[in-house]
Length: 334
Ligand SMILES: [Zn+2]
Ligand SMILES: [Zn+2]
Image (cartoon, rainbow, N blue to C red; front, side):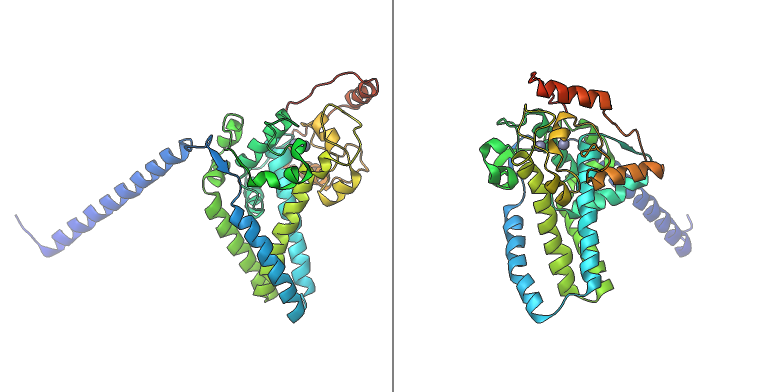
């Protein structure tokens, strides 16, 4: 047998290529199998949000904001970009996690829109969309009971943020099966911490690069943005179940409050929303401030959204009439 060195080296090269292809294909098959497996322990009682993170970013903001403002002045570009980022994160919660994913009140026509939506949603530090939708669907299903994760019956501050400090049942994959079937949402759910770190570092880095102000990007584009977006979202669970009118249903604590609509991207019309959870609008009149509704409508006009669910005027009037006549109405479906 001729053991020519060039033949040996070519043989070794072919074996190496074959082995590499085999290893990569095995890794691909394994990751595919793992990603389709339901995660373990999702029904175990767990801490909702890392408490260290929640307390930590408040403390950091309390220290860095006065420090920054006493040593320099933020540029207009930094303030405007931080505001735009906060708005996009808020929309990714109200339009994305809430009306699109949790309630399925409309559909996106193009797959690619899900990607920026999930990106900005991850930046919001409110947990994955599947986790968020699990809590929210339980909230609608069992509002004002012990099964309601952020029940107002346990007090205003409990509904606002104290519920996050309680050890509660984990994500319910039985009522979020539809979302778990989506590979992108499943991936965000399983790798949330990693994805949050990655999106935050990259987005804050881009803001720092544009504004040439790393300290400002951290204070306004990261800490300040999370503080505002968190509290605006938290007000929907607390104040929107506390101060306002019950025009459409007195069966639960949800209220309509126009002022709250201004700071929550339209989610303040919460009594209407609990009465008709599948309507893509929360402010059902055209003049009611609901930028989330307008954004969905715009997406539909651009052929990027479809199947916008809407409750008929006759049904709305009927509900108002029945409510005025004090008839018992139960509508807890999500
Ligand atoms: Zn509610
Ligand atoms: Zn809802």
